[in-house]
Amino acid sequence: MLSNHSKAKEPVSDRRKFILNMAKGVGYAAVGGFLWSAYLDEAKASPLILRPPAAIKEDDFLKTCIKCGLCVEACPYDTLKLAKPGDHKPLGTPFFTPRDIPCYMCEDIPCVPVCPSGALDESSVTVNGQLDINTADMGLAVIDENSCIAFWGIQCDACYRACPILGQAITVEYTKNERTGKHAFLKPVVHADACTGCGMCEKACVTEKPAIFILPREVAMGKAGSHYIKGWDKKDEARLKDAHAIHTTTNVSKKKA
Image (cartoon, rainbow, N blue to C red; front, side):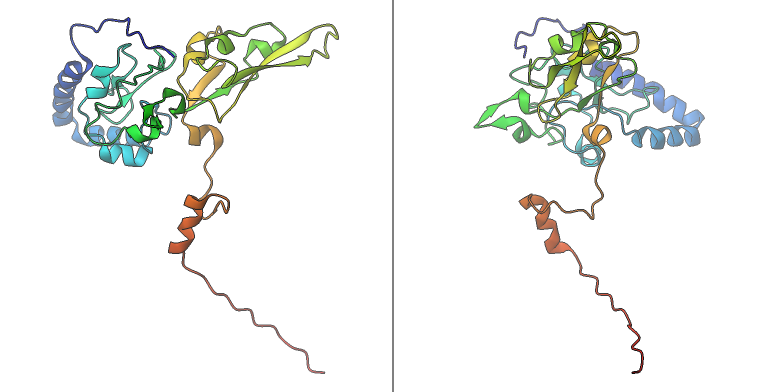
């Protein structure tokens, strides 16, 4: 976790840049309204966008975010950006790209309290009345075992060392290298219950294309259908109250004696 906001802001804020780009976008729309509309529909459908800490579910986020840019201006590391034409994301919404600039896990999470619309839910990162960035859920780290050099037998723990929740979100698993019979694999393992999706591991990855990368949690882990109920989860089980029972009948033919 980092609390010292060491990086100075650029003279022209992302919000101002966004407004300028939007003005250009309006011009493009006047020329090709149909194509522009199609682009927006495609962008809105993208499932791989990473949002700021405490962002509510994507569908609700898009309805709630007013595209004010306050969270972007509050970020001391320029991690957050406002989507502009060509980003293939819903215009004006905040996002971040870990390989470029990850979330540096500020203890005071300055981007969250400034949100005026509720698109960033402060209560979701609050524990016992205090902000706790370790409870954030921006996504989940996923490892491509085919390109991770640690799975080849080459010693590398860059992602493990970069993780701000050292020894919890990522651990190193020691296994015997059956190929050589002499060496050991030191394989990184991501723990979904602790990973916040900050992306510092992706930023630190030594391969040209990161072998560990952040995906939205539902994309990384899969999403169960709404017709499945977790009986041990009281909130999920509450959905049964609104369920409609379906009664079926089966006609069984009886043979005459």
